[in-house]
Image (cartoon, rainbow, N blue to C red; front, side, top):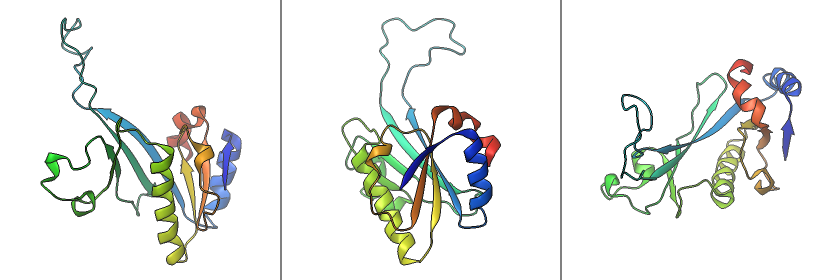
Length: 164
């Protein structure tokens, strides 16, 4: 079950749900770690240098007070990056998946949330997951047992630190 909500409803829902079940927040960000800077000490663009668009996508999930954190969800391009030294993402302490563009796709999101919902339902917990502005709220699985998901509008993503 998912909803898209406004600012006033967000405050009321957060107030009511803190007494019912834990609130979790999931935020996504993309890092292009080899891009040439276009600002800073350099006052002009570097001519002849094309920016390397090597990217990693991260998803961080934590409860409202920060006492419980899920392992970071990292999406890269390589199936087995050399930096892992023949280890898996789970052995290194995070959830790693790959695709051609290192983007969070609907399939990867469904896989992640279904796995987490299964873990929560086995431990007989229910949570409210507040999700940042993502492009695939329609791809949420219909049969989530332990997660109620609220999707934020773009305006609310910037207001979120003031709400929690």
